[in-house]
Length: 162
Image 1 (cartoon, one colour):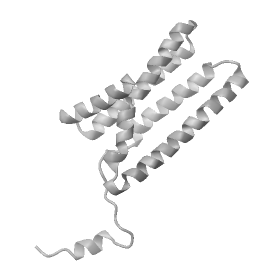
Image 2 (cartoon, rainbow, N blue to C red):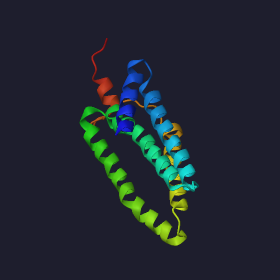
Image 3 (tube, helix red, strand yellow):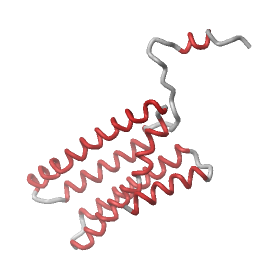
C-alpha cells in the first residue's frame, strides 16, 4: 500500500516540479520494474527463508510503486471520451496475466520441483516490462480521435480563410 501511495505522490510531485509527463511516468515505472527484477532474482537464490520473504515483500513494494504511473497512462494518452475504453483494455490484459501467473508458476514448480525457475521467469517478465516502457513506448501525449468518415483534409479545407 505504501509503495502505491509513494509512487502516485512522486509522479505528481515530479510533474508539478516541471518534469515532463513522459519522464515522470517512464522513470517511475522503469525504476520500479528494474528494482523488482533484481529483488526477485536475488530472492530466488537466497537460502534463508526469512530473507527470501523480505526480498519478495520489497519486490512487491517496488511493483506497487509503478501502479500510479501505469494507471495514469490512459488519462495521459487518450482523449476524455476514450479514457474508460483504454482503461478497460489495460485492465483486461492485466487480468489475463494475473490469471495465468499462478497456473504457469504451478506448472513450472511441478516440472522442476523448485520455485527458482518460477521466480526467474517472474523477474524476466518484470525486466521485459521495464524495457517495453522505457524503450518501446514513445512519448506520452494525448492523441485526438478523428470521427469516422471525416478526414483532416476536409476539416482544414472548411476552415475560414485568414
